Image (cartoon, rainbow, N blue to C red):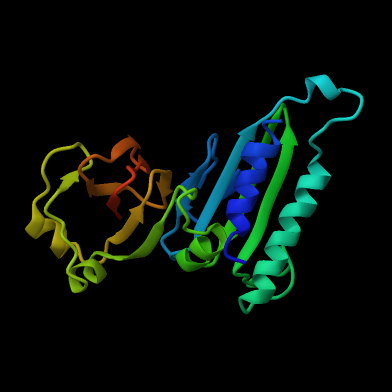
Length: 219
């Protein structure tokens, strides 16, 4: 089910228009649509959409239980087709699903959906990579992986925007590396050290990428 998350995003954006923490000191408490990259290479996505039910006070047009049923069905279908259990939620400690619903809430005219992905590949497969998808490609590894793959780091800058020392950058072999194609708000489970020129640093853990392929290195 390659279009699952894209369909969900479409439901949030189109239909609605008619605190998660990792085991670290970096908390993902999104206030806008974004993704969170963890050091173990897992991904969390947040879809946050506003809507107006004021004209339907007696019978809200957009109901949490209906949205939840749609999301759960999409997640169960994806998991069952991709080697996981036919369920939408992690029920036991240590259990892992390709995709799991972390939470879905509808409150104060805002719908917030958090999904956990076991890998970048699961994120992409569930999301779809068509033109409508904000993220077209996502690879998570280490700086050494990037060096081994021959990635061009010549346009990298330090977190403060100054030109990066390439020798120093490539010697930071164990730092985490994210390669992302597409414009998105991305938070990482660490401190951003280097990034591609053109990427905007929102805070020491969060960047805004461009439509092009961008590299983010964090420790």
